[in-house]
Length: 278
Image (tube, rainbow, N blue to C red; front, side, top):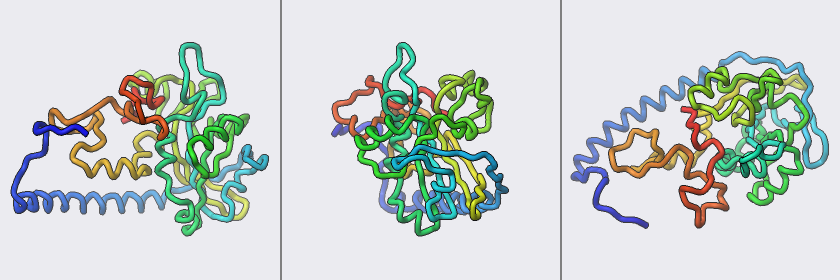
């Protein structure tokens, strides 16, 4: 652990600290009320009925979309970046030979699913990679979350987490992917991207209620929320931190949880590290 007497928060008396803390508390309360109001608006969004029949490859064979709900009325799907193809020339690692480190970070933040089920909600991970690629990686990471493959279906294209102009999928985060590439928000107009989608079931009828991408996924990661409480925060260069605070390029520090030991900043990290999507 490094220790330094420079680039630290200002040292004050307990009374001065308490005064500043109470001022921040008022802003935190206002933010909480604004978030509650935003969540209320989200719950009031209209929904779209799914008329296309999707099927997925699960550990016990093919399953339908309704099957993913199990016995719940609500379903949350995390769209995990895992490409079914081999790496393009000159590239290796995620998201081709292993799952995306950023998406892996997301799964490490998922709570015990019994908490979701207590609220009539199921959670499933979906990737376009075939189950033959998913299962070994899932075992390596020690996850027991339900994870199915959408390989060979239009599911990923329809929900804009596999972009490919030839498939008619040219939007991500509700924006044109060509424009996002120009703005350095995504690396290319073809490939896998992350997201989360929510569905509601009424009998055999299924409705799409919500999807979020990019920084919309931030709130789903408890690790970020804890780091945001610390003086140094996430230690990424986009943050508004005092000069001299430790910072690195966005996501460049992220690794699969079994790859941190002995890793350096020069090692390959998150497959979307240079694209902040902010």
